[in-house]
Amino acid sequence: MTDIVIDDRIDMNTTVNVAATQNDTLRSARFRIEREAHWRRLDELVTRAEKGGTMVLSYDEVRDLSAGYRQAMNSLSVARDISLDRALIGYLESLGARAYLVVYAPQESLGGLTTRLLTHGIPQAVRRSALPLFIGFLALILGAVAGYKLCVNDSSWLYTFVPPEMADQRTPDASADYLRSTIYGDERHGSEKLAAFSTFLFSHNTSIVILIFALGIFLSVPSFVLTFYNGLMLGAFFAMFDQKGLGYDVFAWLSIHGVTELAAIAIACAGGARLGLAVLLPGLRSRREALRHQAHDAIKLAILAALMLVVAALIEGFLRQLVQDPTQRLIIGWGMGAFWASWLLFAGRENKTLHGPLQ
Picture 1 (cartoon, rainbow, N blue to C red):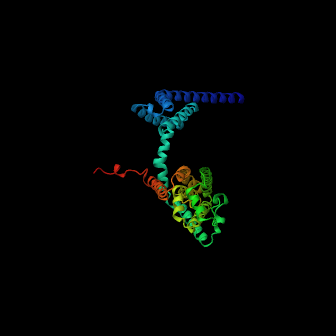
Picture 2 (picture 1 turned 90 degrees about the horizontal axis):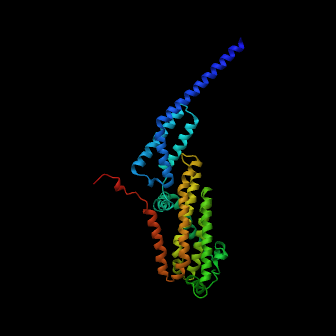
Picture 3 (picture 1 turned 180 degrees about the vertical axis):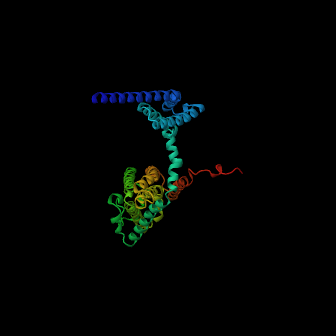
């Protein structure tokens, strides 16, 4: 008797489960039938946009795409709430994800992204980095002043600050005529030797920029020290020429490429400083969140520094040898500085008059 009762209960539970499953299936089928036309239309529009971009869609189709995306997400929410079958939920999740990418992801080519980076991204990142830029340029200037003062008082400091391969026989013991020949590249300094020296400087500065930026995460201290050291070399180098009466000449020689090159080093330091300040002063964010937030602008500063190094290398490899007049060198060097400053200060600014009241 007991076995019969148990069997009856099992049969009843099975019947209930089957009925519930059939009911869920019918409900899912009814839910699908009522909305399936909208999903198919959305699927068609998304497929076309994935293949050719939203540019292939007409105005009405773009409007249908946006409306269809909202309807699909609403259907997905309802399907989850009433626990419809998992196959339907999975289909709506996939369709919603694809539609989201088409509706909200940037539909730009590589050229468009590069243009936006140059016209808005980098200049705006620079203007948001006043304190890190101040740190970078301060480190460079302090190093240059310290290197100059030390070498004016004791010229042997040059051997400490400037590596032998960079000095290239330009030492305090060299004559003024020899030092002058290194500035203007006469017969004792052929184009091959100057080109080799330019290549060395570019390789050296590129390595320094990468190190300065990467080490900034350690509370900015290594970035500051490396930038300060580059300033020491610059100051010591200038002091040696200045003591031989060649201050104006070497200043012009350094300016034609150095305005861009040294600014790149300071900007790389600023990028590293942004990372370091995120770790040191995260504010209300966690350090991980602050680092992720600051990395967006820091990477843009690193890209800018790399771009400036490429330009400096081109100037150093060609114009510095072709242009021998010191005044022209100054005009080119500081003209490039004015170009960088005007681009970074004014590009990508919003025209507020477009958003203001009509006059």
